[in-house]
Length: 184
Image 1 (cartoon, rainbow, N blue to C red):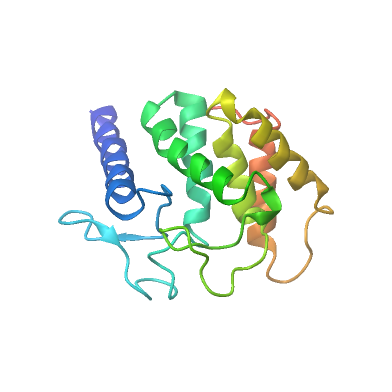
Image 2: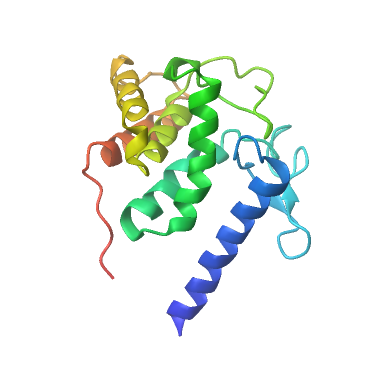
């Protein structure tokens, strides 16, 4: 019984991913931080829906989505995750000209950078590196992302760096092959 309920939850999540990509980010595949009206007509959240001006953009919450979708694909093989990530991977490789240092810390769903995000952050780069793992054709890009993450001198220190450092560590664990599926 519980498995059927969880299957419905998973199916609904992938429905929302597909809807957001087709309707709001067909060129980039980027997903918003938050989605509102999920049971009626789903749409990217409006400004300050929960946190910021960029709640409907690919920002500080959505940057984790490529890591989460890729992990689902890598562990469970859900093809819907790969399909969603193929769009994001194609866009990010093209928009950065294959240079990881050109990945910035926030985008509108159309791929334009949000104001104030003209800097690199492992919170964005790490999850995109994990997303590259879903297709062997991304190997060169994945190698560049891995090298970029390792080139950063350790973990940035400071009172507001725990988020970036945590995402960097979690993604490095997956990238290095040291992540495993939980046993049920």
